[in-house]
Length: 110
Length: 113
Image (tube, rainbow over all chains, first blue to last red; front, side, top):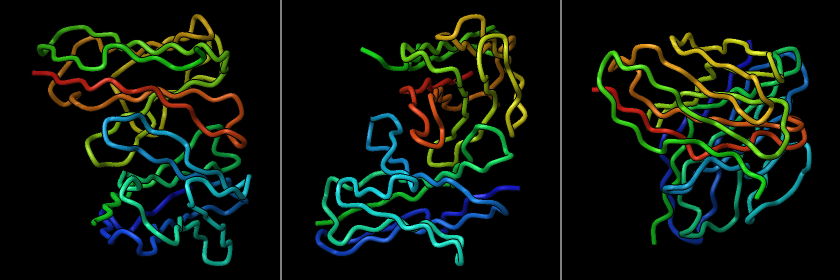
């Protein structure tokens, strides 16, 4: 069975501090991983995809197969980064659907 | 504009009423999904469809039903609403899940009183 774990429900950092949102997954094959973000009063939207190795809004995430992790990082937090972040897994053989973690609320304080 | 639309955004309804939550997308996506989400909690897949006349139950058991008669339309129906159905319902679609993930609608927040 595939599973996504986000151990922190709430992460509070100061503006300008580094951010790391943790995501661990459980899956026996080669997963595709995503980070979604939900800003206040907005819909869930894709932030970045493991497959594209991109940096969006200063965020990056590296797949570590040895640690089965896909942590989201940003060197300097901005106030506008405050949002709910969800890690999601697409597992082959599990059908074409995403499994989501429980989400982490990021609060960037001034 | 190509997008995915959910109506209504908010719905307060009495116990025992039949309700249909609408979801339409104008992107021509074959795959569509319904998730249920309580505030601040994880998303649970309740239904999905790979195309016209294809519907499957998701990981979370739900008393709701869905239909997919047209590519662009994926409505969710509750025959008899109960307070336990109070939740947010999110609709999503996808062209290529591995490449693009989901595009989500704005959600319908349902309250059954």
